[in-house]
Image 1 (cartoon, one colour):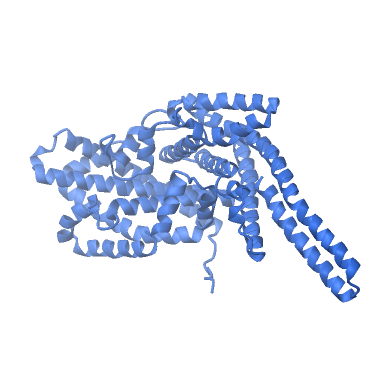
Image 2: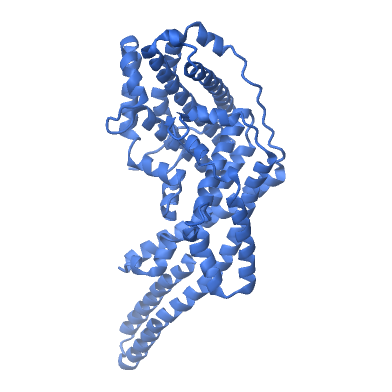
Length: 504
């Protein structure tokens, strides 16, 4: 029996209260991250050598774990605030799916899989003698989370939404499994170990650093402001909204067609997987690839435009950079040697050339020039920052904790040119879709011609059999049953031939 959710939806007043709560929490987490950065700098500069090497090492591990916990909480608050501000259901789904990824990455960092010795496990051994009750509470909560959520499905969702999937249907099927209720339950489960861990770490930091901790905490953070510089104009916001509505509708249509064709094939016992067009429709549907890149970019851009404070702006901008980087890497690519296998080259340009359409070829060449120009933009391809934005823990390449790398990045000014590059990318995605739609029309005609030729012979055979039966059989009841069967066979053939159009 399907589980029924009897919980009432939140009222507008409750939603506003949640927004404020998450805002205050992310502001506090951001301030704590700044404190952690100063403490780590102090330790690294040898200004606390009176601690002794053993205590100094422990203090460094303590600050590092605390920084990652604070950053996880900050990320979740930014994501949840974004989901509470949305207008469209698809926007909420794309926002809350990030929370699944954050929760999964945080669990992996803190507790690991298969008994891995994590930074938390290292300091837990010492903390347990001082905070046995709290450590037991954290262990129970983390075990419950592991049993219910830290499984293969979350790992798959993390992979397909973080780096995108090589199978477009896999991406959207995983997205369909993301619901507001399940994500809310997952986050409640993760907060059962994050909250007590955070409180315990703060107490331990105060004990270890003493007056130094209080002094750093009372330091004024550098004044930080971020002006989106017109990027959130109403015209742009409406443009993004219309794009999300249009292209999410296209995705829903394709996924419904997939379900229909699979059901019809099973009904008449036909192995649809053997048809090459079905492979193109399911496993190699570049249109679906472009659509999930496009939708992810637009929904993230919309979250960015709705931000209200510095840390929120910068974190949503970080998510936008990740979406742009990962999407562009598959769409066109930064590595010239690997570019021939990009979606643009292997699926769009090859068909453009084969079509022989001079106008379409000229249009595609203009779009390709824009894609090449974007591939040269540094903000599109900062691999070090992509790693910091998407991982927890120590970054070997940068030799720093990921949250500290993010914080150091946040204090750097964003140039108007960089924001212009991101808006240019969205417009180029529109250009790519326009070219691809024309390619699709051309391919659909070819598929339809092939399909018509394939099935016309079956229709002719049915008609010949019908003529023969009518000339030989006098039983009206038998003739009626034959006509009914013949019509049913024609309808089945029509259903199968129509999936060629669906694939297009």
